[in-house]
Each structure stands twice: as C-alpha cells, then as structure tokens.
Picture (cartoon, protein in one colour):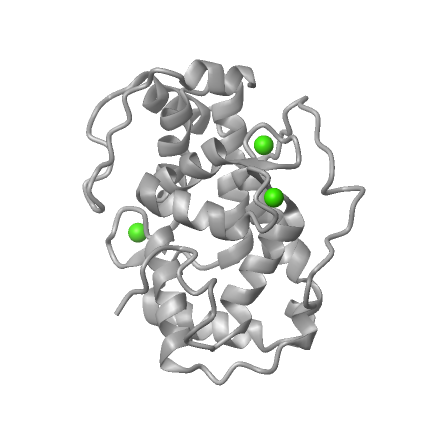
Length: 247
Ligand SMILES: [Ca+2]
Ligand SMILES: [Ca+2]
Ligand SMILES: [Ca+2]
C-alpha cells in the first residue's frame, strides 16, 4: 500500500450533497488555496513517482475509435453525455467552469488526505484537463457541452487522437500515485471528487476491471470510455459507467 493510502486509512469520509460544496475549512482547503495563490497552477509539475505504462505502452483498444459508426445523437446518447456533464459540474450550477475542476481537486485531496506536493500535483492535472477540454471558454452550459461532444466524437481527427485527448488525460488524473494502474481506492477518490457515491464507484470499477484483477489498466479504461462515448445501444453495459443516466 502506498504512503498516500496509508495516510488515508481511518479518515472519516462524508459524502456531501451536490451543490453544497465544501463548507468546512480543512487543512486540504488551505493547501489548495496556497497552491492557487502561488500561481503555480499554470505549470505542469509531475511528481517524482514511478510512472509505467502510459508512455511506453500504447493502448490496445478492443475496438478502435475509428471503427465505431458515426453518432446520430440519439436520446440515449444525449442522456449519457448529460450524465457525464453533471459529473463535472461539481458545484451543480448548470455550467462547467474552472471552479468545478478546482473543487474536484480539493475533494480528491481531502478524500486521500494528500500532502502539499500531491495536492499541487492533483490540482495542476485537473486544471490542465479543464484547459484542454474547454479551450478558451470560461464556462460551458449543458446544451453547449452535448453539442460540442457530438461534433467532436464524429471528427476523424478526434477519434484518431482519442487516446491522447481523452483516455490518457483522464487516466492520469485518476491514477493518483502514477503507477500506471487505477486501484479501487483511487477510483473511489475520483468519484468522491465528482460528488458521486462510493457505491457507484464500486459498481463502475467492477465493470471496467474486465479481467477482475482488482486494478484498472489503461486498456480497460480506454475500452470503457470508448464504449461510453461512441455507442448508442440502450443495452450497452458501459452506459451507466458514470452513474445512473440523467433524464
Ligand atoms: Ca459548475
Ligand atoms: Ca495507481
Ligand atoms: Ca484489470
């Protein structure tokens, strides 16, 4: 067990209803504020932790993104994207903004009781993800998001770059200790950071962990994400990988 998780043992974890955010002033909050004040968030500063897999081992998609048919934008597919949107609208105000990513980083650091260095690392990664996903937009509404994702998912270039654009970045954000595998504890921290329950995390984890070895590899992760975004089949098992579908 890593030091990060040894440190997290015995923590009292309290799920907070969406929209309320964190009300307690915790040491984690102070760490996040400190990082933000030092304006180091625009730089990416990887931890000196072992990283294997991502850089040297190209993903083996079970089915390449290019091989999925074009999306028609069915009601079911839109519900999936709205579900995904709601995960990242962490403060529940109807828009995805930088604040949502900062809040999610704070919640992740709190859940795992991370030290200053790791808190900064998590915050930098999430802000990088925000900057990548939204480009120059300051905020994105649900409607704009669904439209944007449909256009992107039908672009040849996006499908070709799907590993780098979505899978690699999302995997890195979730693999907190950077060992190239997502443990169930890391996945719980990820779900907690988005305001999702431990139960939903466990359900999704078992679904994605295809070979049932207790860890999610980047291949397993990539397959689940590709199935989620590129399919419109109501019976696809990955439809609820980000929780029960929004209306
Ligand atoms: Ca929001
Ligand atoms: Ca890990
Ligand atoms: Ca596995």
